Amino acid sequence: MELGMWVTIIAFGLFYLRLALLRGKKRRDVREQALAVKRQGKGAKMTVDEEHLPGYKITSWVLVAFAAVLMLAGMMARYNTGFPVWAQEYWWIGTSLGAILFAFCFE
Image 1 (tube, rainbow, N blue to C red):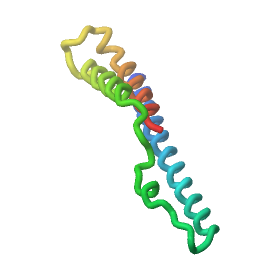
Image 2 (image 1 turned 135 degrees about the horizontal axis):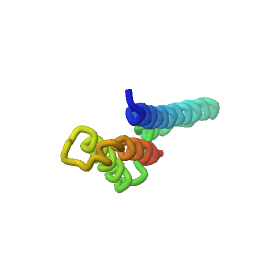
Image 3 (image 1 turned 90 degrees about the vertical axis):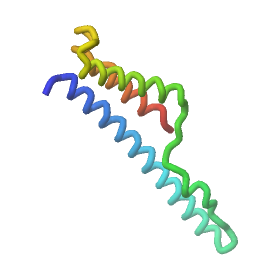
């Protein structure tokens, strides 16, 4: 496999790792809140809304769109012969930057 493929695999691995960390943080926060409510006694209630929310939220839709365009442009440069030769050789830069930018669109 070539260098660009390895860089892209690592970039998407970092993206999925970040999402997994955010999801784990959300579960940990919900568990801590449930324990706090349990310590308060019978009269206290846990808010149900927070428990059913996804483990992440999107910070900027503009960045999501820009990251998606970068990833798609990189993949098109990889598989389309209509792009210049330099773009076909360095297709992985746009794809990897898009994946890393996409990872930071969530909190």
